[in-house]
Structures are given as C-alpha cells and as structure tokens.
Amino acid sequence: MTGLSLIIAFVIAIIVMILAISKFKIHPFLSIMSVSLLLGLAAGIPLVDVKVDGVVKTQGLANVIGAGFSGTFTSIGIVIILGALIGTILEKTGAALKLADMVVKLVGKKRPELAVLLMGWIVSIPVFCDSGFVILNPIRKSMVKRTGSSSVAMTVALSAGLYISHVLIPPTPGPIAAANTLGVGDNLLLVIGLGTLCSIFPLIAGLFYAKYIGKIVKSDDETENSHEVVQSYDDLVKAYGKLPSAFKSLSPIVVPILLMGIASVASMMKITGNLGSVLAFLGTPIIALAVGTIFGIITLASAKRMNEFYDMTNETLKVVGPILFVTASGGVLGKVIAVSGLVTFITDNASVFQVIGIFFPFLLAAILKTAQGSSTVAITTTAGILAPMLPALGLNTPILSVLTVMAIGAGAMTISHANDSYFWVVTNFGEMSPAKGYKTHTVMTLILGLATILEVFLLSLVLG
Image (tube, rainbow, N blue to C red):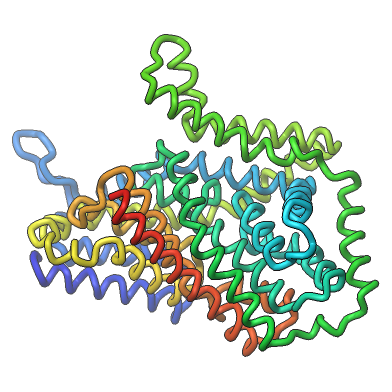
C-alpha cells in the first residue's frame, strides 16, 4: 500500500484508535498497540525480517513493534520517573504549598486572580495539575473570603495556571515525553525556556477570561462561612508541621534547570577537558533530574519524613507506569509510520503539508485530547505519530522541533470536558455544576489552546 491509500489507512487508523479509547473505553495502551499492528499489516510491512545475503534489509513487523517500544523506554523512562518523583516529594512535604505562599506574597492579595494563576503555573511544573488543584484549593478558598473576589474567577484562574505549565513545561511527564520523542530531549533547557515563553499568551488570556466569567457565573462556595474556609487552610498548613524553607522548596526544580543551563553555556563556549566532561554529564537531563531528586530527598529528610520515602516512590511508580507504557505504545505507532512509507509519501508531497506547518501538530493533539480526555495521552501519542514526519513538515530544526512540542501541548489543552478527570476535579472542588463547568473550565481550555497556538505560530515566524 502506497500513496493516497496509505494516507487513508492512516486516517482510518487514527479514527479507530480514538473510538476505541473514547467510545469503547479500551485502555490507550491496548488501543494504540492494536492500531499500530493493524496499520503495519495494512501498509504491507513484512511479517518477518527480509534478508539479502544474510543482512537484514527490511525489519519484520514484530521487530518494528519491539524497536519502537524499547527505543522509547531507552530515551525517556528514567527522566519521566525522576520528574514525577520530584513532584511527589514537593507535594508530600508541603514544598508545593510553600511555593504557592511565595507567589501570593510576591503578587499581593490585591490581585488575587493573578496570584492564584501564577501560583498554579509554578506548582504544576513538577506536580500534576489534578493534584495541584487539590493541594492549592484551600488557599483559593481562603483568598476568596479574605479578598471578597469571585470564587468562579479564582477557580478558573487557578485551573488555567495549573493547566498551562502541565502541558508546556518539563519536568511534567507529557512535555518531557514529547521532547524526547521528537529528538530534543537532550536540549531540555530550551524546551523549558520556550515552554515558559509560550505561557505568556495563555496566562494573559486565562487571567482576562477568569475575571470576565467570574462576573457572570456564581458557585456554591461563595455563600459558605468564611471562618470554616480559612480554618481548612490553616489545618492544611498544620498537617505539614513547619513548611520547608524557600531554598528547600525551590532547589529540586531550580538546580536541574541551572545544571542544564550551565552545560549549554559550556557547550557554546566549547569548554573541553575534564571540566567540560563533568559539566556535560551533570547537564544531561537524567543526571540533572537525579540531582534535583537528591535535593528533594534532603527536603524530605529535613521534614523528618524519610520513613515515607519508600511509599512515595512506590506511589510515583504506580502513577508513572501507565504514562510510560502509553508513551512507549506511541513510539510503536511512530515506528510503524516511519517504516510504512507514509513519511516518504509526505516528503514527496511536502509542499502540501508544509502549508499546514505548525498547526498540524496542534490539530492532531486537539482531536486526540477532545476525544479521549487525557492531555498526557494526547501529547505522547501525537509526538509518536509526528516524530518520523518532522522533516517532511519542515519542522526538524531544534527550535521548530521544540515549538512542535509547544504546539502539541496547545492542542492537548483543547478542550477539557466530561471525559477528562481534570474537568471533574475543577468543577467538584470549585463547587460548580457540570453545566457551569462547561461555561467556565471547558471554554477556558479552548481559549488557552487557541492563545497558545497563536503565540507558537508567531514565534515560529520569528525563530523558525
């Protein structure tokens, strides 16, 4: 199968995958693996290796699947695990709460929506947005009562801040996975930098929409007793005992960034010898995040909670496991696509696809996100599909590859509704009915996605 028929088979495969995940509730891992196998068969990939004079010229389908799966684990597994473990430590020690308090003090209580927006954006860099909302919700509620601001505005602002960094900035697993899959995992500092830059438009859009919708929609918790809400926040702080210091809270995130930054500078300055080797080693994402994890463990030890470290690690592995397997299955689909001849067809007709350019990753991720609910699944699956296509789409330079990660993240925000667990976290903890959730949270995620892809597009014109 070649040419247009192969494109049609690819589109059908994507539709089947979406229906399997969203309508028939088949786990994404099984859905993606099954579709990869069927697409490989339809594309005519041989069942066994084809050898010429004893040398493998064409891999068999089984080996293609194995190579796609193992290759993804090789490049990304440890990075995702360490990033998630840092997030768990920050959450359990109260360091995430400390980071939130620092933002509130920096911005001030007179700008409560901006405070919770930035609070969420910072906390969700290492912590999943679902967990982040649960952690920060007591602060949101107490600020509503202390400032007299709209509860809905505060809910939307907090959920927006959490969501933006969740899909754009490592060490959240989704962006890390996409960066590695698209070949820019070793340049994680650039991904973090552009992720931060690409957060500007959606942060502004989220803030304005939060203030706007807060004047229109009212939630139940705006009539609650102020003393009870403030007490719940105080109880949360007391549960941690004494919160970690600012240094201990920041170091697990900042130290890896600094190490990667120093390594990049050393590379640009062409520092060689033992010093250059050491800096390059420490700046490797795996090692940098490992050092960040050590700083997290120091924070854990100072909180006298080392006895919980085993359970924290175990809990993290349970959370990360499904992400790793879905990511690896996305790698399988990408490998099948690469071997099938689809990339060759796209390359031969590159002018057609390059017209879509950076919007193609956005649209594909948006379709997957809206259909099946999980932003991480949308990100990892889209990255796996796109990896072999980047040269044909004209997106294979380091900058454009990172912007492709951002475009995928933008699509993975668009849109969050009833099939997304985050939708229910926001509506339930924000004390809104599902109907109000659609008017507030769902519309907000659409606005965030569009604002992000607009900024990504503009940056691609300037930097590309």
